[in-house]
Length: 113
Length: 115
Image 1 (cartoon, helix red, strand yellow):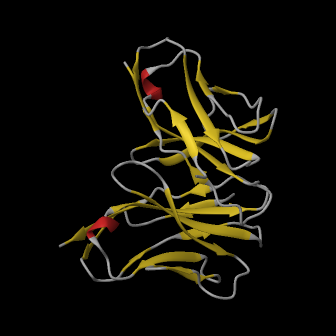
Image 2 (cartoon, one colour):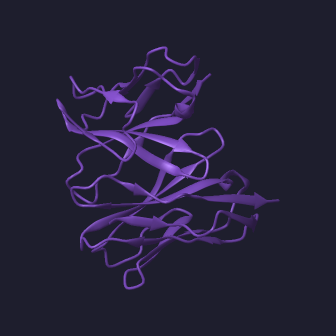
């Protein structure tokens, strides 16, 4: 069965510091995609970053990077130089082939000035 | 602008009064899906559709219906809403679901309250 685990219900980070949000996954499919979404207080779901299971390098998108450790089945999101606007819920998700997206329960990040 | 739209954005209704939440995408995506989001439970899939006239149950389909008569539209129907269907609902679409690279794009959400 496919499963995503986010063990941190809430996190605090000082403005301008980096923060890592944890995500572990479980799947038997060798081909899968890993996604992170941001949900601000306004409610919309915003796609942040994607990592493929066969990608050799960790994905980066601006201040977001994905620390992909395949052997450990982890796909942690790293946000560098945190900003107040980064305060939001963050969801990790996984998509094997021919299977709908599976979400974790999310981590609420609060950035402190 | 490429987007997924949902209407209404907010709805307060009463138990038993049939309602429809519309969802439309302009990206020519084959795959569309409905989720509900509840505190502490994350996002759970209600129904999905891999193409026109093809729909399948997700994890929590009870009390919901969907249809996919056109590629761009995927309405969610609550025939007899109950208070336990009070939730935040998202429609999403992606090019396909075959590949692990298919990124899903979400609508803005519909906040439904059933009294």
